[in-house]
Length: 173
Image 1 (cartoon, rainbow, N blue to C red):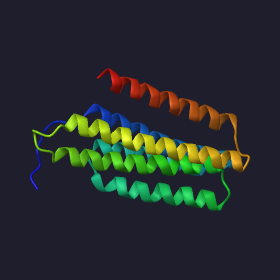
Image 2: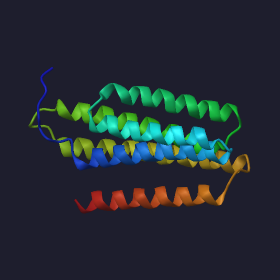
Image 3: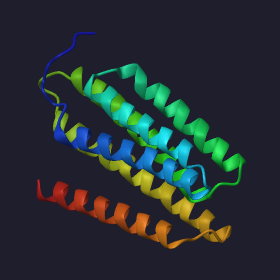
Image 4: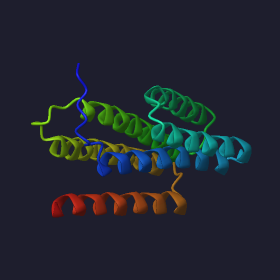
């Protein structure tokens, strides 16, 4: 396949990817830290910085490794009865970040006549709605297991405001 440099590696995908990585590693680190594992949480944050660096360096392979490790640590956290919301949020945003990396690759191969901005916008909207649905399911589990905390509520509020801001920006364009 021929690679076209359409310069569509636009701000939307880059911003969504960066936010996804920060949310994935941040929620995972928060979950581990809330259980008293500060050293592991620091390593998770260092891993998040490396993940961000890998995107800047265009290490496409690192996203798959990061997805695997994020899921592994989230599953281990669930197995050890860590707060379910933080582990699920980490997994959701790890999948989201991996998908944004794949989208960046896909956008490079579009033909110049393709509506790259439209494809990008629609893809991010679909994946964002899926992530919000996952957070809703995680919130229901948090309520079911009686693990609701102020931190979880604040996190959901921040993510909701971020999502609504993004939707408002898309509508204006």
